[in-house]
Amino acid sequence: MNYEKLFEDSYSRVLGEGIGLSDQGKYFFQSFYDTFFSKSDEIREKFTNVDMPAQLGVLQKSMVHILSFYVAKTDSEYLHSIAMTHSRGQYDIKPEYYDIWLESLLETVRNMDPEFEDNIELAWRLAMTPGIQFMKFHY
Image 1 (cartoon, rainbow, N blue to C red):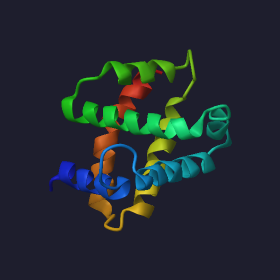
Image 2: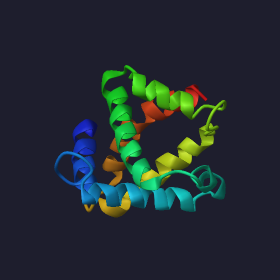
Image 3: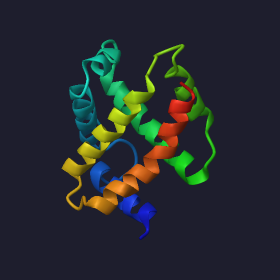
Image 4: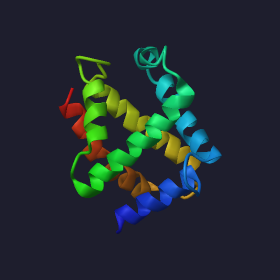
């Protein structure tokens, strides 16, 4: 089973085609945040003063760096910077929030990818987990 290909195909289906943040991509990331915020008042409060339209672009860029970390097994300056700002000393994004983040992401993919099935879920978990562990480690 080629999990990388399964992930890439699913990622294309949920984000839509083209460069930049397509309307479908915006809908995907907004749907993700709606799901994520519904899981925890504490998490929702972390975003009280955040410019959410801008945050959609930040999330998309962060996902690119998380995926790059998965493929290259090397962190980028951007990913390191995000990890530092999310650490206990700054935004205080607790390690358990990342588990909720991943489950919210998978729920969003499940709802938006018409071909979603168990192997696609596993492909997403395999792609996201190294970056999530990186973020947790730097807490």
